[in-house]
Image 1 (spheres, rainbow, N blue to C red):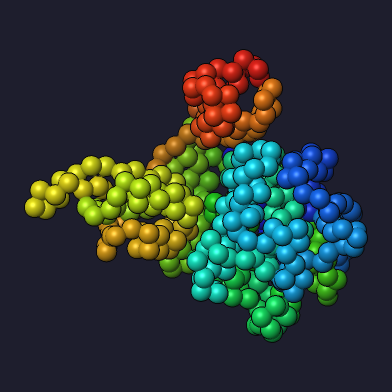
Image 2 (cartoon, rainbow, N blue to C red; image 1 turned 90 degrees about the vertical axis):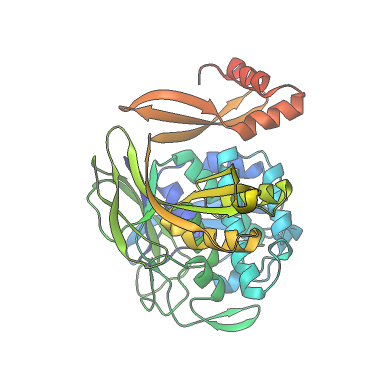
Length: 424
């Protein structure tokens, strides 16, 4: 299985991620083309070769208005609400209305939603009222959406990461001097393997932490793999240690023992493996019986669970005590997302308890890629068996978007996409 691996020995930020992924081989012209679909003025981006402590890679430099390069660390990200796009609601609307590939849009919204949730908890405000101090700036929008675009182009079958270096010392922000790691970064890294003290600077920004939290499938302290290609994203600051983010393509052998950190205990577990035919994963099933919520409340709950990282959510009718009709809420999630899912169930539903069961899911390898047809873009999901394509399907949201635009049925929208694009 082709795996994309992040080595965060010097931390991670949005610009380092974008630079590393371009250094790995993503066409910078394609990145610019997708970013232009945001329809935002006042910015430009350049990718330049640079080095830190003899390590050569790519540095992503976002220029705002007067074309002054913006340095990326926590101090610079705070309090720069360029173009008015500073609230979570504004940013979400901006991305949803853009023409970027649907897979990239979903990932970018996921990254921003995690930062919004962290900021809401740190500052004690409702999530929809969050105003981004660290990531509301235009340059951070470019970093996050650009990184999401790159990951959508690369389409790794699996994403892994090392433990994350957070740094040390202090950082100046809009609210004063804070110890490193900053509160939002700590919140975003809950349940993830981290270390501190390797540097006396802030090395992981909220943006970098959110990218990892939204994208990484497993945090691996060690693994057996074939190294294919390594690239580097260059950080802004010149330190006495290499300020770079390493990313690499790896080929994991069949039945590789994948290790990941469980959200609650932080201990590695050998319970995921990959064969030539399918993927086996140890997941968590949460279930609760509810009899005092409306249909609208259940719909709201489902959306929040998926935003928190649920892999599947189902509602099943049942009969409860005293013959009351009820609903069984079933949620499937990876161990790394367990804490977030528990919080959503308690905060967004009337449940006062739930059951948890460890389950093993067997699934076929899948890939997603974007296609361009006459009326726009669509995301295609393809599953494989014995390394051969078994079937492909156009994502529902892309069919729905076209159906609404043309005032036609979902089936007609699918037929139109196939007719204009060809065989999928």
